[in-house]
Length: 114
Image (cartoon, rainbow, N blue to C red; front, top):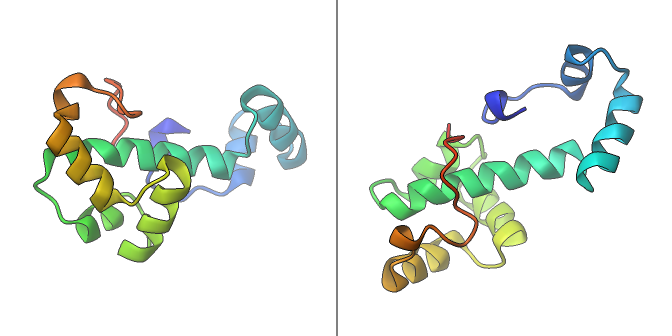
């Protein structure tokens, strides 16, 4: 699912790719991860977008569109649900606290960005 993080893919296609029915895949996924595929994917998109926030060269609207969100407001709502604060507040705190160097707040070294 990481390979297609920013391209919409129906859950039926994901389930079929691992030779499971949609219903069985959803049960197995939830049991293994503790969340639904949609929630997991949303969280991964938000966490991946944090790298672009740290770089600071893209606007929030550009980041939103790059990660498949409809607009800045949609991205901000999803980001706040996952991280607990808005992307602009997170970006400002990260810049002020030097978190880019520390690599904290959910940003890991794995490259899964879009």
